[in-house]
Image (cartoon, rainbow, N blue to C red):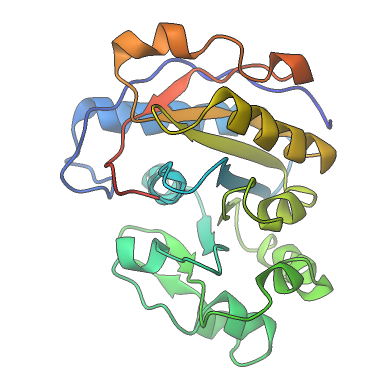
Length: 252
């Protein structure tokens, strides 16, 4: 493991009709994402560009909603922020943000478009690179030297780059990107994630030498937090991140 796992402060989120974080979202929702944002900021005091991988143990744990709203929270803080949809099998970020799906990351990596053509500048101050056309070889593209070089180039333009990746227990994509990222946030969902699935996810990330910043729990009410935060990952030396975010049942 590189560095130590940071602990995030408790923050509860109420259910929201619209998943996209806005300035008019309920106060508790805004504060929850601000708490996560603040802890990430303090995790990297010296790095020029911070690359953050967002993943989950399983599908359906609201990791894409977390990635999108965390990126919006950084944009609201006037940070130079780029969100890249690296879930090249089931991308959803473009839909959530009402952005174009193509051209995107896959098109950029294979030379079908330029960086300027792939980056979309949204009215809320967030820049995004959508997934692009669905490729037959997602893991190979994400693990290619071109992807690493792309992140280096983008790192000269942005303070933060958020990578929305597939569930780490399902495919290797998140593990691949965690090797070159500044840190990784694991999203787990109350009622869906099991102790076994979370420990498996942490084991895979540890094997990749990932710096796990913490865990964000979604779909959890305040009364459930106390009992649910016992035991996750302690066998692997990870601290537990006490940040919580409720999300819709259908969120990924």
